[in-house]
Image 1 (cartoon, one colour):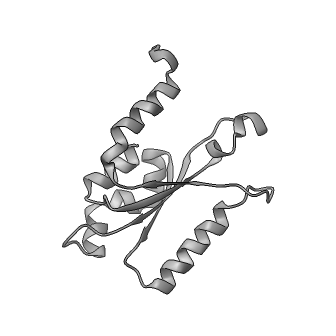
Image 2 (image 1 turned 180 degrees about the horizontal axis):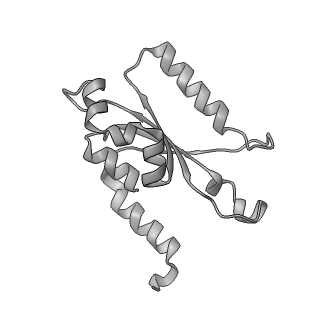
Image 3 (image 1 turned 45 degrees about the horizontal axis):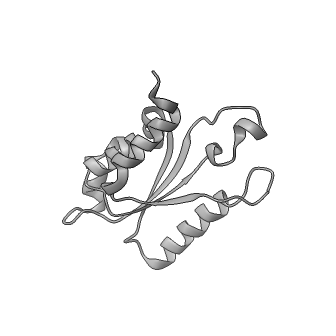
Length: 137
């Protein structure tokens, strides 16, 4: 949620995100370990009047993979929806192929969520209730 908030603060609010990671695979049960991070590909539209270069200089900490990983515990990748169709198709196919299978080659899925912040407050409350069942400290 903090990664999304940082994107929103930079003006990136249109598009969608693909979410993946070991939390979707029940690694706690299957492999006896806790999930470590979240994998996110953000397919975004540029804010009005902002170029790719301006956006990159506006949010350098969000385009640097190591910075995103260290700050948000997210493997975050950005895909501009305004790129040419052939390149966008290649990017989409790449991420689908990477995320459609587990390491043992079994099929799996991933989640797509809208990038707009309209439901983030409710989502954050839901996540908080899951990590803190019953509201206990």
